[in-house]
Image (cartoon, rainbow, N blue to C red; front, side, top):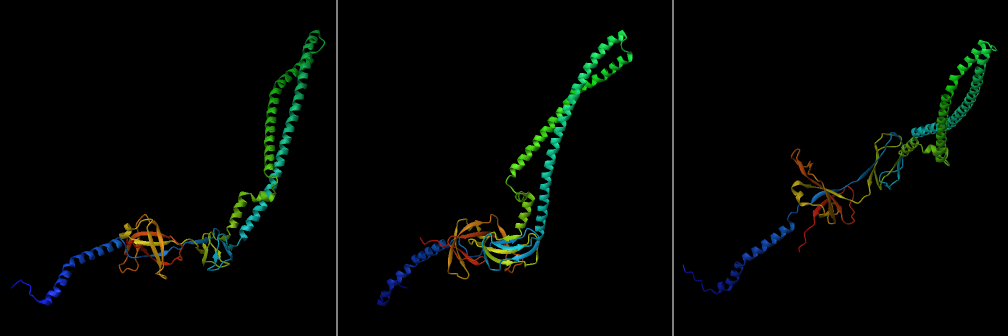
Length: 371
C-alpha cells in the first residue's frame, strides 16, 4: 500500500489543525499535572473539619457547713456579679455558740482581772511579810548578841566570884548553860537571814515581772473595749468566720443555671447549692485522632464556625494540646468497645465572637494562600 498522502483538497484543509491538536496533548497533560500538584500542595497535610464544643466553665456554690436552707435569693437564668449573695443558711446554732462563747469570754476576762489583782496583792503581802521577818530576825540577832556579851562578861566575873565564894556553883553553872545554849543560835542567825534575803529577792523579782506583765497588758488593751477584746479572740474569730460561711456568695460573674435546694431543706457540708455558668472569654475544645496529631502544633491558626451560622467564621489559635495521647470511646461506631485515640485541643478565638458555652462548632485549618 502506498504511503503517499492522497491529494484530496478536503483532507488537506483539516489536516494541519488535527495535527496541531494531536501534537499538543503532552503539553495539556503537563499543565493538568501541575495544577493537580499545586492543589495537593495547598491541601497537603490538611484533614476534614473537626467537631468541637465551646467550653462550659461552671462555678459550684457549695456549703462548708451542714445547715438548713433559710433563703434563696436568686432564680434560674438570673445574672449575678462577683460577691452577690446567692443564698443564706440558718445561723441559729452558730449564733447560740457565739453567745455562749461571748458569755464565757466575758466571765474569763473578769476572772483574769481578779486573779491578777489577787496575785499582785499576795506578792505584795509576801514581800512585806519577808521584810518584817527579816527585821524581827535582825532585832533578835542583835538582842541575842547583846545577851551573849552580857553572859560572857558575867561568866568571866562569876568565875572569879566562885573562887572567892561569893556565888554558888549552881548559879555559876546556870550562866554557863545559858551561854552554851546561846552560842549555836548566834551561829545560825547569818544562815537564816541569808535565806530570808534570798526569798525576799525572789519575791521582789516575781512581783516586778507580774507588775510588768500587767502594765504591758493594760498598754496593749488601752483604748480597747471589752467587746473589741472578745472579738479579737481566736476562737471567736473562727466562729464568726463559720457564720459568714452561712452566707453563700458568687465568686465570679455569671448566670444562675441550677438551684439544687429549696428553702427549708437541710444542706449537707460540701453539697452544691447553686451552679453558675461563668462569664469568661469562650474557648473551644476538640479531639484530633492519633493519626493526625503530627499535623497540629501550638500557635497554629484555625477557623471556627457554628452549626447555627456555618458561613460565619472566627479565627482561633491553638493554645494547648494534651501532652499525652488519650482514648475516647466512639459510641456511634457499630464496633463494640472501639476506642479512638488522639489528643485534645484547646483553641482561643483571636477576635471577639458570639460563641455560646456548650455550643457545637466545626474547626477547619485555614487555607494556604495562593501566592
